[in-house]
Figure 1: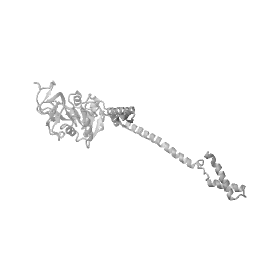
Figure 2: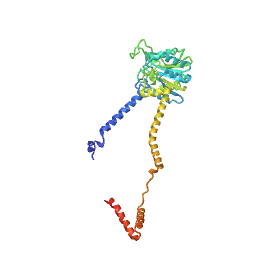
Figure 3: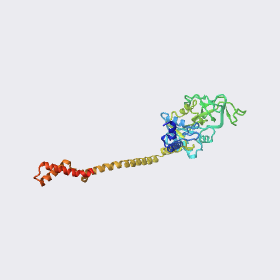
Figure 4: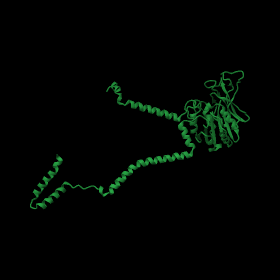
Length: 374
């Protein structure tokens, strides 16, 4: 068969079924992707440039630290506060009083809260509610001298000596905001270069009322028995920026001494459906027990259905073995039949010789076989 004939005949394939199978596979894959990924900015299951999936993976892979995504602030009470660091990345909603009380209790007991925010008001409101003094000022930082791909992506080179900045020489920012902080109450961790300015009116140029200076972009302060770290740029945690110098090192240092790392999603956009379902199961022990019981019952039911036919076959074999009515019937051989006939003929004709008896038996055998030959 030539190639042209093969193509004309469809290659021997049922193309409507092939196309249906391909379409079905595409739909299933698309549904699975939609069920496990998100498009929300700063989302831990968003693999795009503005997601934080790499932060989630790096946090989960850190040796010695247990990483957890939490959707309810009640989970703060499940961990030893003085061994735990909690990250809040650009929250979408304001924290209610009950949520604030839980986080404040977490800090009062020695926990560390890390808030990454630039222009949103929800982060500043949380900082005020938990008793921190540091705020983000909401103006875009620009640096015409020390920048990555443009002035709105300043390279903050003013790194102070602190345990949180070990191994960190700079931060690569992206639409960051300066911090308003009382340096008598807080310790500045990282500053911009001295060529940065706050572009208050966002006209992309230095105006007379805007000042070149070295502005703080990361700071830590003691609050009660715990600590609050404020970073004026949540973008250092997104996939497009986390690998830029030295963003990963800085984020890792913030949780390096912790036994537990929490990523607070309680006031962020919804998670992918499948991920949300898994987290719900993790958060509800009673639901775990219920699902486990259902799973065991399902396995037992399936096993019983598969085992029942085999058991029935065994029972049938045993019953047949013990039932005399099922015993095999002995069929006499040809020699036995001939011998019986010979005995009967001798009894009826004692005067016949043996040769005649055998001839009669042979004739009888031929008569028996004739119906089968027809």
